[in-house]
Length: 258
Image (cartoon, rainbow, N blue to C red; front, side, top):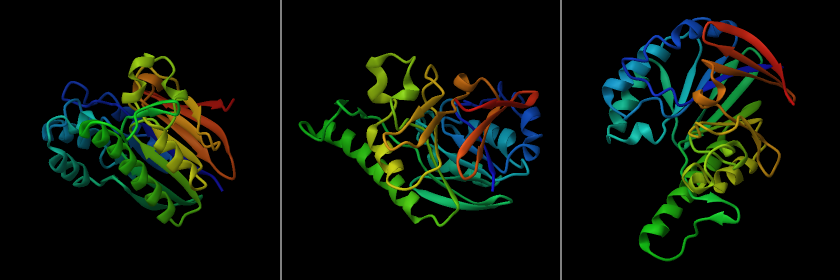
Protein backbone atom coordinates (compact mmCIF):
# COMPACT_ATOMS: atom_id res chain seq x y z
CA UNK A 1 0.00 0.00 0.00
CA UNK A 2 1.48 3.31 -1.10
CA UNK A 3 -0.24 6.69 -1.08
CA UNK A 4 1.50 9.56 -2.86
CA UNK A 5 1.06 12.96 -1.23
CA UNK A 6 2.24 16.13 -2.98
CA UNK A 7 2.69 19.29 -0.93
CA UNK A 8 3.81 22.90 -1.13
CA UNK A 9 3.20 26.03 0.91
CA UNK A 10 3.90 29.75 0.84
CA UNK A 11 3.22 30.24 -2.85
CA UNK A 12 2.00 33.82 -2.18
CA UNK A 13 -0.10 34.09 -5.31
CA UNK A 14 -0.92 37.32 -7.12
CA UNK A 15 -1.35 38.19 -10.79
CA UNK A 16 2.40 38.27 -11.39
CA UNK A 17 2.79 34.69 -10.09
CA UNK A 18 -0.04 33.07 -12.06
CA UNK A 19 1.35 30.45 -14.43
CA UNK A 20 4.57 29.80 -12.52
CA UNK A 21 3.42 26.49 -11.01
CA UNK A 22 0.80 25.34 -13.49
CA UNK A 23 3.05 23.51 -16.01
CA UNK A 24 4.30 21.12 -13.30
CA UNK A 25 0.84 20.91 -11.74
CA UNK A 26 -0.66 19.71 -15.02
CA UNK A 27 1.45 16.55 -14.62
CA UNK A 28 0.45 16.06 -10.97
CA UNK A 29 -1.98 13.14 -11.52
CA UNK A 30 0.95 11.10 -12.84
CA UNK A 31 2.91 11.62 -9.62
CA UNK A 32 0.50 12.06 -6.70
CA UNK A 33 -2.89 11.05 -5.34
CA UNK A 34 -3.53 14.40 -3.64
CA UNK A 35 -2.02 17.87 -3.25
CA UNK A 36 -1.75 19.54 0.16
CA UNK A 37 -1.24 23.31 0.42
CA UNK A 38 0.40 24.47 3.67
CA UNK A 39 -0.96 28.02 3.86
CA UNK A 40 0.15 31.49 2.78
CA UNK A 41 -1.51 30.90 -0.54
CA UNK A 42 -1.83 34.66 -1.09
CA UNK A 43 0.27 37.73 -0.38
CA UNK A 44 -2.27 39.77 1.55
CA UNK A 45 -5.36 37.60 1.83
CA UNK A 46 -7.56 39.40 -0.68
CA UNK A 47 -10.37 37.86 -2.68
CA UNK A 48 -8.61 38.92 -5.90
CA UNK A 49 -5.47 37.04 -4.87
CA UNK A 50 -7.59 34.02 -3.94
CA UNK A 51 -8.90 34.00 -7.50
CA UNK A 52 -5.27 33.69 -8.63
CA UNK A 53 -4.85 30.69 -6.32
CA UNK A 54 -8.02 29.18 -7.77
CA UNK A 55 -6.73 29.59 -11.33
CA UNK A 56 -3.36 28.07 -10.49
CA UNK A 57 -4.39 25.20 -8.19
CA UNK A 58 -7.98 24.45 -9.16
CA UNK A 59 -9.14 21.60 -11.39
CA UNK A 60 -5.92 19.61 -11.24
CA UNK A 61 -7.34 16.11 -11.55
CA UNK A 62 -6.46 15.21 -7.93
CA UNK A 63 -8.00 16.38 -4.64
CA UNK A 64 -6.47 19.61 -3.32
CA UNK A 65 -6.55 20.13 0.46
CA UNK A 66 -5.40 23.36 2.09
CA UNK A 67 -5.02 25.31 5.29
CA UNK A 68 -4.66 29.07 5.37
CA UNK A 69 -1.64 30.98 6.63
CA UNK A 70 -1.08 34.29 8.37
CA UNK A 71 -0.82 36.16 5.04
CA UNK A 72 -4.23 34.81 4.06
CA UNK A 73 -5.70 36.57 7.12
CA UNK A 74 -4.09 39.98 6.54
CA UNK A 75 -7.01 41.78 4.88
CA UNK A 76 -9.74 40.17 7.00
CA UNK A 77 -11.32 38.56 3.94
CA UNK A 78 -11.06 34.95 5.10
CA UNK A 79 -14.69 34.02 4.25
CA UNK A 80 -14.26 35.38 0.73
CA UNK A 81 -10.90 33.62 0.31
CA UNK A 82 -12.32 30.30 1.51
CA UNK A 83 -15.40 30.59 -0.70
CA UNK A 84 -13.28 31.38 -3.77
CA UNK A 85 -11.08 28.34 -3.19
CA UNK A 86 -13.97 26.01 -2.45
CA UNK A 87 -15.75 27.15 -5.62
CA UNK A 88 -13.02 25.39 -7.64
CA UNK A 89 -12.98 22.29 -5.45
CA UNK A 90 -10.14 23.17 -3.06
CA UNK A 91 -10.98 21.95 0.46
CA UNK A 92 -9.93 24.39 3.19
CA UNK A 93 -9.39 22.87 6.64
CA UNK A 94 -9.41 24.65 9.98
CA UNK A 95 -9.72 22.32 12.93
CA UNK A 96 -11.29 19.56 10.87
CA UNK A 97 -10.27 16.79 8.51
CA UNK A 98 -11.11 14.85 5.40
CA UNK A 99 -10.63 11.25 4.27
CA UNK A 100 -9.64 10.63 0.65
CA UNK A 101 -10.14 7.30 -1.10
CA UNK A 102 -6.85 6.69 -2.93
CA UNK A 103 -5.68 3.69 -4.93
CA UNK A 104 -3.30 2.80 -2.10
CA UNK A 105 -5.83 3.19 0.71
CA UNK A 106 -7.70 5.80 2.71
CA UNK A 107 -5.71 8.97 3.35
CA UNK A 108 -6.80 11.11 6.28
CA UNK A 109 -5.74 14.77 6.39
CA UNK A 110 -6.36 16.90 9.48
CA UNK A 111 -5.55 20.57 9.20
CA UNK A 112 -5.30 23.80 11.13
CA UNK A 113 -3.44 27.04 10.52
CA UNK A 114 -1.75 26.81 13.89
CA UNK A 115 -0.16 29.68 15.78
CA UNK A 116 3.02 30.86 17.44
CA UNK A 117 4.15 30.60 21.02
CA UNK A 118 7.53 28.90 20.92
CA UNK A 119 8.92 25.57 21.95
CA UNK A 120 9.74 23.69 25.14
CA UNK A 121 12.01 25.71 27.40
CA UNK A 122 11.62 28.88 25.31
CA UNK A 123 7.91 29.48 25.05
CA UNK A 124 5.23 31.86 26.19
CA UNK A 125 3.06 30.80 29.13
CA UNK A 126 -0.56 31.41 30.07
CA UNK A 127 0.33 33.94 32.76
CA UNK A 128 0.32 37.69 33.24
CA UNK A 129 -1.40 40.29 31.11
CA UNK A 130 -4.63 39.44 29.30
CA UNK A 131 -2.90 39.98 25.96
CA UNK A 132 -0.22 37.39 26.77
CA UNK A 133 -2.78 34.89 28.01
CA UNK A 134 -4.90 35.42 24.89
CA UNK A 135 -1.85 34.75 22.69
CA UNK A 136 -1.04 31.49 24.45
CA UNK A 137 -4.65 30.37 24.56
CA UNK A 138 -4.91 30.87 20.81
CA UNK A 139 -2.00 28.46 20.38
CA UNK A 140 -3.57 25.99 22.81
CA UNK A 141 -6.97 26.16 21.10
CA UNK A 142 -5.42 25.63 17.69
CA UNK A 143 -3.46 22.59 18.85
CA UNK A 144 -6.51 21.16 20.62
CA UNK A 145 -8.51 21.51 17.40
CA UNK A 146 -5.80 19.71 15.44
CA UNK A 147 -5.66 16.89 17.97
CA UNK A 148 -9.43 16.41 17.85
CA UNK A 149 -9.43 16.40 14.06
CA UNK A 150 -6.65 13.81 13.93
CA UNK A 151 -8.40 11.53 16.41
CA UNK A 152 -11.73 11.69 14.60
CA UNK A 153 -10.44 10.44 11.23
CA UNK A 154 -10.98 6.78 10.30
CA UNK A 155 -8.29 6.07 7.71
CA UNK A 156 -5.28 3.95 6.80
CA UNK A 157 -2.69 6.74 6.85
CA UNK A 158 -2.88 10.04 8.67
CA UNK A 159 -1.25 13.35 7.72
CA UNK A 160 -1.24 16.55 9.78
CA UNK A 161 -1.29 19.77 7.74
CA UNK A 162 -0.46 23.13 9.36
CA UNK A 163 1.01 26.47 8.39
CA UNK A 164 2.93 27.11 11.61
CA UNK A 165 5.62 24.61 12.56
CA UNK A 166 5.08 21.93 15.23
CA UNK A 167 8.83 21.57 15.91
CA UNK A 168 11.91 23.80 16.06
CA UNK A 169 13.98 21.45 13.86
CA UNK A 170 12.56 22.77 10.60
CA UNK A 171 13.13 26.39 11.65
CA UNK A 172 16.92 26.06 11.57
CA UNK A 173 18.19 28.92 9.43
CA UNK A 174 15.65 31.41 10.77
CA UNK A 175 16.73 33.91 13.47
CA UNK A 176 16.24 32.36 16.91
CA UNK A 177 14.49 35.53 18.03
CA UNK A 178 11.50 34.84 15.76
CA UNK A 179 11.02 31.13 16.57
CA UNK A 180 8.08 31.97 18.90
CA UNK A 181 6.29 33.51 15.92
CA UNK A 182 6.92 30.56 13.60
CA UNK A 183 5.33 27.74 15.55
CA UNK A 184 4.59 26.13 18.89
CA UNK A 185 5.26 22.89 20.72
CA UNK A 186 1.54 22.31 21.34
CA UNK A 187 1.07 21.42 17.66
CA UNK A 188 3.74 18.75 18.02
CA UNK A 189 1.99 17.34 21.07
CA UNK A 190 -1.27 17.11 19.13
CA UNK A 191 0.46 15.31 16.26
CA UNK A 192 2.07 12.86 18.68
CA UNK A 193 -1.28 12.08 20.30
CA UNK A 194 -2.22 9.71 17.45
CA UNK A 195 -0.28 7.48 15.01
CA UNK A 196 0.49 10.14 12.39
CA UNK A 197 2.46 9.17 9.28
CA UNK A 198 3.66 12.66 8.35
CA UNK A 199 3.33 16.30 9.42
CA UNK A 200 3.60 19.05 6.81
CA UNK A 201 3.93 22.80 7.38
CA UNK A 202 5.17 26.00 5.75
CA UNK A 203 5.76 29.55 7.07
CA UNK A 204 9.53 29.29 7.69
CA UNK A 205 10.96 30.57 4.40
CA UNK A 206 14.55 30.37 5.61
CA UNK A 207 14.08 27.16 7.56
CA UNK A 208 15.14 23.57 7.00
CA UNK A 209 13.17 20.86 5.23
CA UNK A 210 13.35 17.98 7.69
CA UNK A 211 12.49 17.51 11.34
CA UNK A 212 10.91 15.10 13.80
CA UNK A 213 8.42 15.49 16.64
CA UNK A 214 9.41 14.31 20.13
CA UNK A 215 7.26 11.25 19.47
CA UNK A 216 9.10 10.38 16.26
CA UNK A 217 6.68 11.67 13.60
CA UNK A 218 8.50 12.97 10.54
CA UNK A 219 7.94 16.67 9.91
CA UNK A 220 8.59 18.38 6.59
CA UNK A 221 8.73 22.11 5.89
CA UNK A 222 7.27 22.42 2.39
CA UNK A 223 7.44 26.21 2.10
CA UNK A 224 8.20 26.94 -1.54
CA UNK A 225 11.34 28.99 -0.72
CA UNK A 226 12.67 25.91 1.12
CA UNK A 227 11.84 23.10 -1.32
CA UNK A 228 12.47 25.34 -4.36
CA UNK A 229 10.15 23.16 -6.43
CA UNK A 230 6.55 23.29 -7.54
CA UNK A 231 5.79 20.56 -5.01
CA UNK A 232 7.35 17.68 -3.11
CA UNK A 233 5.88 14.18 -3.28
CA UNK A 234 5.91 11.88 -0.27
CA UNK A 235 5.33 8.15 -0.69
CA UNK A 236 3.49 6.88 2.37
CA UNK A 237 3.07 3.20 3.12
CA UNK A 238 3.78 0.90 6.02
CA UNK A 239 6.70 3.26 6.68
CA UNK A 240 7.85 6.52 5.14
CA UNK A 241 10.62 5.35 2.87
CA UNK A 242 11.00 7.66 -0.10
CA UNK A 243 10.77 11.32 -0.96
CA UNK A 244 10.15 12.30 -4.54
CA UNK A 245 10.50 15.93 -5.54
CA UNK A 246 8.79 17.34 -8.61
CA UNK A 247 10.03 20.72 -9.74
CA UNK A 248 8.70 23.33 -12.10
CA UNK A 249 9.11 21.65 -15.47
CA UNK A 250 11.17 18.86 -13.87
CA UNK A 251 8.77 16.27 -12.43
CA UNK A 252 9.95 12.94 -11.16
CA UNK A 253 13.33 13.64 -9.54
CA UNK A 254 13.66 11.03 -6.78
CA UNK A 255 15.57 11.28 -3.53
CA UNK A 256 15.87 8.76 -0.72
CA UNK A 257 15.22 9.52 2.93
CA UNK A 258 18.22 10.00 5.17
